[in-house]
Amino acid sequence: MRWGHLEFAGTGSDDAARDTASRKAEVLRRAQQDGLLDSSWDPLDILVFVNQLSMAWADQPGLPSIESGARDQFLADRRAAIVTAVERLFPAAIPHTTHHREDGPA
Image (cartoon, rainbow, N blue to C red; front, side):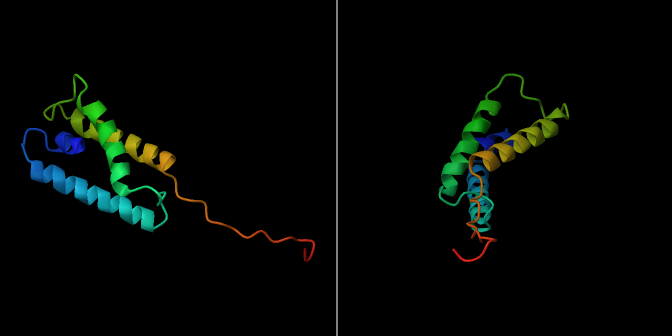
C-alpha cells in the first residue's frame, strides 16, 4: 500500500507495506464490528480509499524530509485528515430506535 511507502520510505520493504495493509484492514474490520464504521463496506475497499488519498500526498513535490523534523507533523496531519474522511464517508449506522407514543396506545 502506498501509505507504507510514506512510512517506510527508503527501506525497500514490501513485506512491511503488506503487513501494514493487513493490520490496517483488520483495524477497520474491528471498527465495523464495534459499530464505529459502516459494516456494509468491505474493509479492503475502505483501505483502498485511504490508499488513494495517501498516493496523492506521497507524490506531491516537496514532501518534508525526515531530517527536517517536519515529516512527523506532516504525517500526523495527513492521518487526522484520513480519519475524518473515513468517519464521514463510512459512518456508523444509526441504531434503529423504537418510537413510543406518549398519548396512549395506537
